[in-house]
Length: 302
Image 1 (cartoon, rainbow, N blue to C red):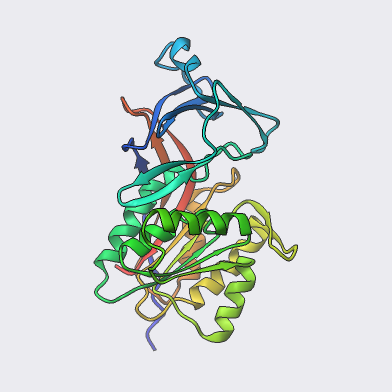
Image 2 (cartoon, one colour):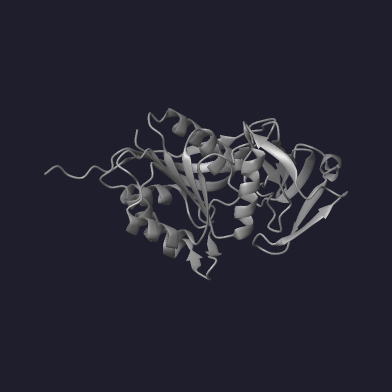
């Protein structure tokens, strides 16, 4: 009997860099802050990793339309506005359109550093010789789901927040993708995957972007370090024999790309392929400075 093939674990990390595009840029950074452009608005948000000095003077920073003042170590805080910004405004990445929003958790209803993942997913779906079914867990406002749908995949989008599902559906309408085969599921991700495993459902691609901590619509508790290994094992069960990828992303401070890579390599034993790992980084609009914001591991069949 031949031994089960383990995926090849990349020997070195990969930094997936996101630079500026028409509707987004990290204009400057430093002294624990980022100065960013989201469509028509300049925004200042805290970023403790930006230990260096800003390139621009304080006058440039003071022209921001919105500044987020943190209220502790987590994401809570409040926005200060120089005028009266719109509640939502249109943004786009390539052909996918979505709304920007000033949320209560310092972000603007999407994570710009994920654009590097979006580009990879778009290419992976378009390169598939056969139609793909993609499962997006913890899908939030749906940009990754819409990227995959735009590339031709049938997508199942799962999130525990009814509000986030509503925003994702609105983004599908904005993108002209409401008629694409996208299933919107408001449910605890772990419960959904367990049920899909019992049904024998399969997918050719899975996107897994869990929070450090969360609660499902039925009060289910999610803790990344305790619950991720079992959820990942169940996700691997859902991969079809023609599966092309599984992308795992995490924002927790006490984790690394290498640890995610090791976990994914173990979970994918018997599948072959390759596991890349590293971090997602935002790069300044001008210059070579950037900041790593999340860690990832990615299995691909080739």
